[in-house]
Length: 195
Image (tube, rainbow, N blue to C red; front, top):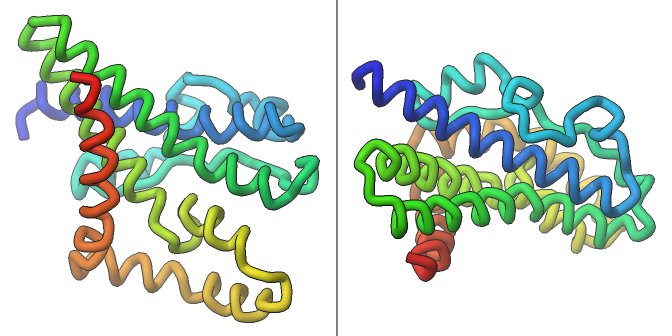
């Protein structure tokens, strides 16, 4: 990977992370929780969201992480609906950013801009798809766990306590790619409708 590719990837990653985390913060704000806003995280400024090690991992192995936006679901008027909407909002932000990239690629016929837009599109789609996996601490788990009855809390706690090893096994065995691919394909089909 040459230096220009690394720079383009860094821009794309910064956009994907910023849009994703801003989506969580803004949705929480709309639903009555200003925790992220008070901590300066309701912003598109990548410096507020990037975790240096997570960024490095994303550039090297294409799987990384950002600083999670702080959310206090106790501030939501409806805990379940609030949790679902805030969990979905990061992926929705990435999908909207990917659609914007497709529109840019359609109307701006400059190679450099198209390269940046395409790379940004791919990272946004990948970020959305990966985060929708129903594995803690990913957003997909926030959605799924909202539908699990309270009486199963002990089982949920046990699952959450072993989730990091499960996620690492999926990542390092390539199993995560098999699970993410159908989600990524659906998102990609939606996004390319705007080309």
